Image 1 (spheres, rainbow, N blue to C red):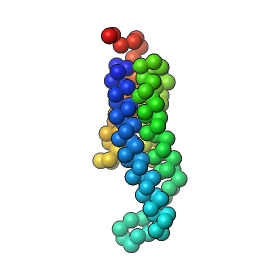
Image 2: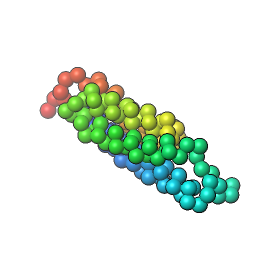
Image 3: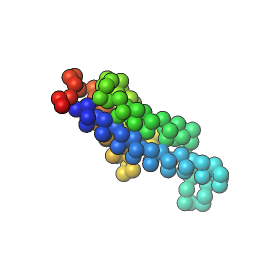
Length: 119
């Protein structure tokens, strides 16, 4: 279970980084070119929240995944906080469903792993 949490956390964090790059970049683009680009795009309500979530959630997911084998409880908490942050910042949609689900499942598996994995 710890190995599964490790893999899910790292892959979820990488997918979260991709979503975070676009989320952060979108808010910067809207700041540079005005809050409205016709009917095509509008600035989000809280760009600072998107920027913080874009940076922190993937880092927490990768860190949680990396420590899943040695410190499973801390890793599980980090993965669940990462999933909650992505859900709160970006919502649940076609781009975030996999990183949220992977981080959430990895967090549950890491917390549920009571004994070390058999070799």
